[in-house]
Amino acid sequence: MNARSFRVVVAVAGRRALAEPGGLLVTGGFYLVVVATVSSLWRAASSANQGGVAGYSAAALTWYIAASEAATVSLNVRLIEDVGNQIGSGAVAVELLRPASVLGIRMSAEVGRALPRLVVCMAAGATLCTLLVGGPPDAVAVALAVPALVLAIICNLLAQHAFAAISFWIRDARSAWFLYQKFVFIVGGMLLPLEVLPDGLEAVAKALPFMAMAYVPGRLAAGHLEPELLLVQLAWLGVLGGLAAAAFAAGERRRQVLGG
Image 1: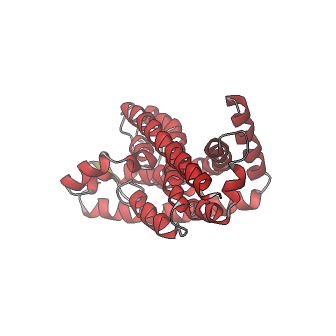
Image 2: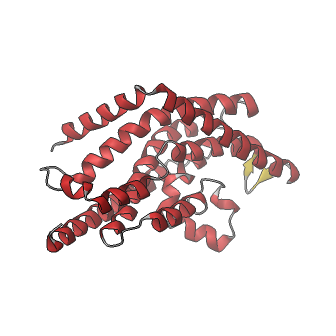
């Protein structure tokens, strides 16, 4: 399949998501509750710390949480487990018979489903932040956060498929899903800016791919004009894409050897 075919899959999946407004409303409502709750905790911490935490003002922390949560709430949080179940049931084995990249088709469909949710979350988050703390700390930086959010969900989806491929060898992927989510929550920067972590852990977190999935759009939305972060995301996108493709190719070879 060519690039146009994958774009068609993205568009079809996106239209299906838009055809279910109830699901989008639930996603948006859940997102607002999470952002309002977590950002209020950070604003309280900022007030108790003379107006700032690790170089972030109360307003910057609010915009950070809005972006970092949008990057993750837009996705199917149990995707690893779902893909693992499909591998275990043989559904993926059937897809492997098609003359097309299984990973490419699945990635295109997931991106298509995530984009409408991402738009809803971005609109809801920007409105909530403006009402709570005013406009973004830096207009150019928050504009860069938009492509960073798209890159974040692609990196996240690729990593989830790479993790899910463990089900070609181990039937139950729930442990991989549990471990992966904790990585994104903490060292990915979903719940807190990485600068809040101890120096050693901060350095490790910034060297891992999870930072590309929540921290980068959060950092930009918080007003830090660091366009080089987009290049970091692109680099991790290439690495994660290679890992996911290699994992699925190895899984396919295992299926063939076992006759599955």
